Each structure stands twice: as C-alpha cells, then as structure tokens.
Image 1 (spheres, helix red, strand yellow):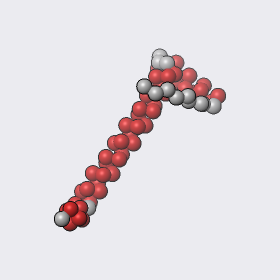
Image 2 (cartoon, helix red, strand yellow):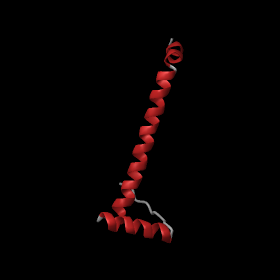
Image 3 (cartoon, one colour):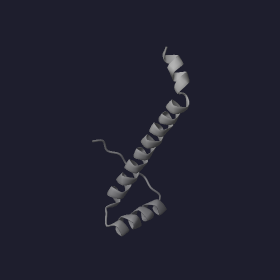
Length: 66
C-alpha cells in the first residue's frame, strides 16, 4: 500500500466533512470512494471506446491483421 497526502482547500475540506457526516462515514472513506469511482468510470469509458472502435472498424482491423 502506498501513502499520499491530499491537499484540499478549506471549502473542499468542509464539503468532504459534510458528506462524511451525512453518510456516517469517515472523510477518508468518502475520498477513497470518490477516487475509486473515478478510476472505475475511466476504465468503463475506455472499454466502451475500444468496443465501439472494434465494431465500427471491424473490416479495417481484419484487413490490417492479414
């Protein structure tokens, strides 16, 4: 496991604190969930772009593979 420091503005810290309070979670857990959600979303979009490219350009990919 790696460690890192997350520097937030006072406004960002206050917002994070309010979210954590509302959800009965720690600020750490809320921040970690946000990072994980972002990474998961990026991976999903990447896979979607690749699948779309594969579908739209199947003939070209087949010719290139020959």
